[in-house]
Length: 85
Image (cartoon, rainbow, N blue to C red; front, side, top):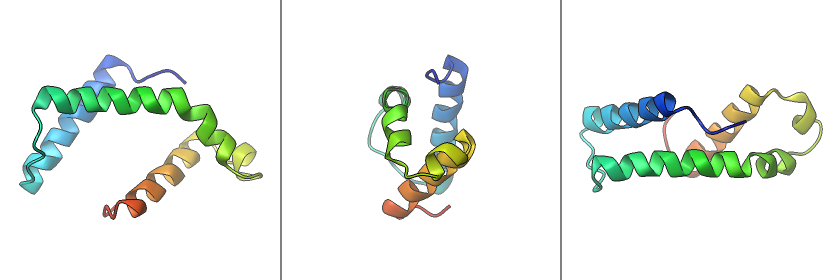
């Protein structure tokens, strides 16, 4: 899988800015730096997708769909960092 298209990265960035604004949360970095962070995380996920997949035990590795694996990863990250889903 390739990195997200520019429009999708921009959507993620905009969604994050809306979320922080709606929540009244200050993140302490300029908008451009938040955008750079979105790009960096997307690049990291692209560079490490195979390693993440290889870390899954069978039969999850070969049975779960890419979307199911993404949800699994998301839920673990949310729980790890105490983010309400």
